[in-house]
Length: 398
Image 1 (tube, helix red, strand yellow):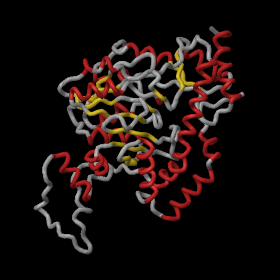
Image 2 (cartoon, helix red, strand yellow; image 1 turned 180 degrees about the vertical axis):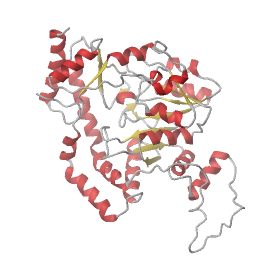
Image 3 (cartoon, one colour; image 1 turned 60 degrees about the horizontal axis):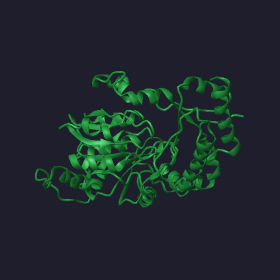
Image 4 (cartoon, one colour; image 1 turned 120 degrees about the horizontal axis):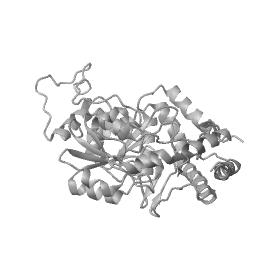
């Protein structure tokens, strides 16, 4: 039997008619940027998350950049985050001229260790960027308490956690801004790149909206005022609108970005969003089968009772990582190794001064973590075969 690590074609085939219909409607409308499809998707996600504002953007990396920028992060600042995540988390910080400050993780849930955050805070620290890795929320009570004490922004990296809950609140609603990715392999995946920022803060919503569209027009003017704390009075130009000239449209008040979610991607996501809780529930069933069926020679994930993961990945640990992955491949089972190189040891961040051994927990986890297939359309036979194959490895090869 062959069990793929992920097969997004299965999901498409199940709701093909709805997706194709929504895409066709966008094509016939010829409204490809913005418009009612994007607005409706933003409205539905805001309702799903329980936040006031959800703003589509081009991708998950840009969502992080927009959030950091809107929260005032810039050159010379520091942002505390985890080294056990996709490169984009720290890349977004560095792209604004700030420095990522890495804090080691907890071995039981792979998330940033909140007990080690406070010692890394300096006068340069501007924000804390927790990542709900593999779809399991961080200890947000402790993180937000530290942030409040030191007057820091909390920016959630929810790229893998849409639908996850912390004490019955959705991730993305727990900090100043939540940042989402709709990359095709995510629990809610587009047919290309896509992202979103979510917030309950009206002022941040204005700034985020302006930044994603070049800092232009009325939103740009208002965002400039909010970011600078004073009225924006344009006296150097003739601001009188004419039939051919709108002063707001052609003035840019901030250096922003071209970071909009296009309508075709919004259409795909609108078709999938009503199924998201169903998809996450199916992932939970796969995880439960693994939790029960896998032998004790692998270390299985353990989450607190107030945590409801969306199970973006199911990760086990074993000192026999390379041999297990090879055995799975030999027997037709796909697997992943997220993340083999922690961010503090990435070549791009050598200048930050970290060395092997400086963050021992994440280095150990990275050397032992194996991701097993977990997606909603896995069959019971496939799940059983994955369990049998992993368990057989420890009988035959260890």
